[in-house]
Image (tube, rainbow, N blue to C red):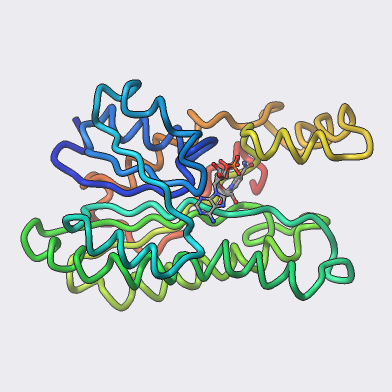
Length: 250
Ligand code: NAD
C-alpha cells in the first residue's frame, strides 16, 4: 500500500485522468476526496473503491467554495490539481474571453487551490515529514509545440512555472511540488476533440501518427506516475515537470 494513511484530494475526478487517478490512489490505500464540477459523474466512485473515495462537488474556478472546502476538511497529505481545458486555435483565433477562461481554469484555479490547502498541508508536513502537490501540465505546448494549442500551451507552461515556484518556496518545510506532462491520452475530452474535427477518422489517425509507440496513452499509462509523485517513494523529487508521452519528445 504505497499511499497508506494519506489523505489526497483530486480535482476533475469525474472522468479521464482524474477519475483513474482517484481509483489508483484509493487502491494504494489513500483516503481520496474526489472533486469535480459535475458530481453526477462520480456517483459510483465510493462503491468502486470500497469506500476509500469520498466525492464532493467543486468548481475549481470558485474561490469561496474552495476556501469553504479547505476549512471543512482535515489537512491533506496530497493534492492533485488535475482540472484543465484544451482550447483549439491559433493566437489569431482565440478571443480575449476564451484566453481568460483558459488561464482561469488551467492556472488560476491551481493558485486558488494552493492558497486554500497549502497552510493545512504545511502543518501536516511538520507532523509527517512530507506532503506532496501534483499539478497537471501537459506535453502539448508546454514541452513541445503543436498547431492550434497556443492558449493551452501557454497555460500549461505557466503551470510548470507555478510548480517550480511553489517547490522552491516550500522545499525546506517538507512540501514537494511537481508537474505532470502527459502526451495524448484517450479520455472523454480527447474523444470530444476528435469528434468535433472536420474529419474525425483522419483526426484520430493524426493523433496516433504522432505517437512513436503507435498508440495513444490510456489513463492506466499515466496513473502509476501520479501514485509515485504523491507517494513517499518520490521523496527526493521536487520542482520537476515529469513527461509521460510514449516517446513523442525523444
Ligand atoms: P477530461 O477533460 O475528459 O475531464 C475533465 C473533468 O474536469 C470533467 O469531469 C469535468 O467535469 C471536470 N471539470 C471541468 N471544469 C471543472 C471545474 N471548473 N471544476 C472542477 N472540475 C471541472 O479529462 P482529461 O482529458 O483526463 O484531462 C484532465 C487533465 O489532464 C486536464 O488538465 C488536461 O489538460 C490534462 N491533460 C490531458 C491530456 C489528454 O490527452 N487527455 C494530455 C495531457 C494533459
